[in-house]
Length: 601
Image 1 (tube, helix red, strand yellow):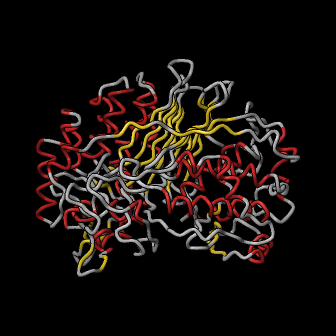
Image 2 (image 1 turned 135 degrees about the vertical axis):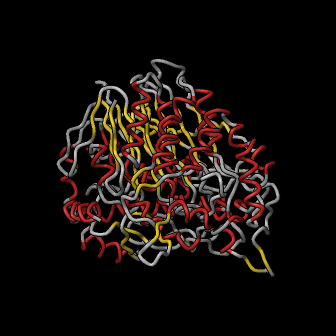
Image 3 (image 1 turned 90 degrees about the vertical axis):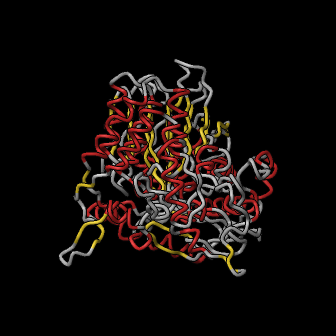
């Protein structure tokens, strides 16, 4: 609550009056140099000269940095951080979830090819299009709560695959501390307590036993902040993984227990589901952007080129970020950014771009192993130019493309770089808080409710009131659509410079873009770019969401006159990022919208 009050106070200070946000631009520095603090940030980033880990739990970041100090590389540290978070942040980083990993080696030490590891959850073998249809009606309760809501988890497979392919330290070393804190316990965080109250009714008895405390009437309720939570069964599962690797989770007693407990509870995940799970090694998508010749706006004239390396399908977020950068080039031709980030002209142009991105996302995107995603078309200049013609500077005007999307919001992201400049961005999730609320007894594993990210039936809203299309329909072993967008910015020499990502469901795409847009286009410091107020527009529902107290009443009035329906929200995405400068300094920024911390080696 204290952080929230402080953050709201900061947003009031940041609120931009019309035609005054050029004040932000007076402190701009070239991307090739280390910027000064602009004075807008209420805190300084963590600064180091070696490695850096930025995550939603400072202790997890410390464990990642300790791995760096013991000779590990960025992959070792990232995997260590992920396993720690699986223990300390079970409401969104549990072993029963899935995620995406982006790895870009330093050009100084390795061939500078970037790699994607897709360890997204996938539908069980028996799942089919009408999996949640009962008596001709869609049962969203079954796709959201309990054992039928879970897809086959990928976290363990993905992290171990990364460690085996790119890491240097043994998994026994990586898992040492996560096992220890699972056994000895950790103090419950404020975020985790909030998540417990949000999802308590969906918990099975095993989950309540782990995270519950007896009140004065001897009734079990969510444990309060600071309670030491011990996860003995999870420690046993982690020990089995440490001993046997991939087979320690996807075969053997852990897999047998998971399958048995699912079947006893009415679920369908089987030993064969777990045994057949495989990670997908994919090629990232990227785009090179140069604003220097596109405008008379002096801030953009001297901007160097940069490469955005990001996530391909089954995420739509990466393509969305690339589209948003291109649309921002087109918007600048209308001088949309002349009054700075907080002006209504800027918000209008970027909101229109966001609407176009989410319309495409709804209609075209799905698992590329099941759906032909026309990426070449969607990232083609001619296509984007034609789409942008719908923009009108004086009013809201969106094309009537049909389709919507669905997705949970309880993910987490963390960013890692080692002393050599190797960079890792990981975003992981269980979908809703504590996923399905189902913990197979004897394992300690909080299971996801990722099946709700599919379109369980066209036109039927999911947990978040949104609906989806055929491209994201359920099928056996299919992976649901996602917005998770681990992203790395490289300079034109191929060196990783910024590592960034976010949590927040559909707001991931817009949050990552806006932070990068402010850093790379308006050139404020990365710490300020993460902290400044954000906004979100996703086409359907047609509501422009503004972070509360972040924008002036004049801006909101002007946006309303343009035709927007305004809604104020507490936060729009949570970002953890870092930036490395040519002088060797590394800045780590952990978003004050949540708990967490950056730690330097």
